[in-house]
Length: 394
Image (cartoon, rainbow, N blue to C red; front, side, top):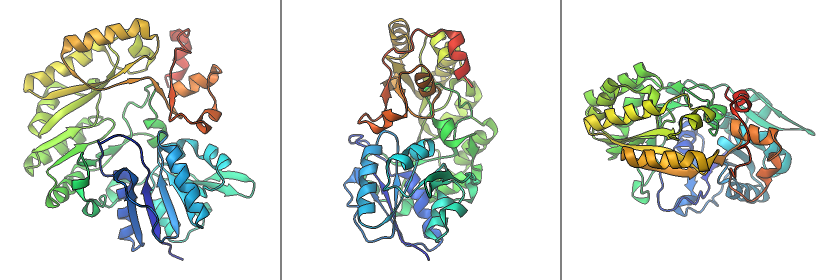
């Protein structure tokens, strides 16, 4: 029996800067394409989520899991089937199902096809990429990552963009070509980086333009991870007059060159963001960045040559902060580059850093039952040397 679905993006408390929930819009588009009765609501915009439906699908990040769990319980109390998906359930499905009986199933990884099959009435055990209870056991089926070109474009036509400060976030890929950084859960969430074809991405951009959206963010975790594909996309943007106004989510300083930077600029990029994290050479090694300070300086110099605005993501109060942070602060000042973010070292499930904290007795999975949105590093592992970190570097 086909079921009706409500998709909810819980309040993530990110202030006034918001974007339409692209992940939820992918799910909405897939369900709509198969004639499933589906609506989506974004709590960040004050949407009321109580509408008639059979299945409640809730997007859950680690940082907003508490609100997501509140919504899940409310939905279960109202007699709905409750499905949670997103980064946190992908990494912590067993923990969630063991501790929160009001969750019926967790989607692991890509959610489009699992949610479609659940809506079509398939039993959980016949749906690839879900975790659920079977009697007293918690079991899961193996995810089958889809070819990204097979997915419908996100339902941007259902978005009132006037409600959002940020424009559309579009994705050329899922995952990261490097996938080893100590503090990052992208590789654990998505696996190896997967790409759309340039033509498929261009068609989505053209559709967005037909909806009146000239600006957007290419929000990949590692935009330039495949040089051939990104060159194809950038040339396609130029050929289709899409080189107007866009921003790059992030990429790596070791995965650009002078020619590519010039092409990124000609394709209309307004700002390119690099995940630098630290300017201390030893810290880069400990964080398993797989890049050098010299590469970062060269990448920024190439951007300045062509007049491309640049920002960097930095981590402070992290490993050996008294030693590493002054070097990073001085480097940012010397490079005259904007800090796109300057965060404390945050600890998320599925990361090598979290595993190191667990192995050394400073955290365990009980932490995620507590009130904190995520862990904050407080110097617990500063005593470890390079040989101790090596086993966490993948």
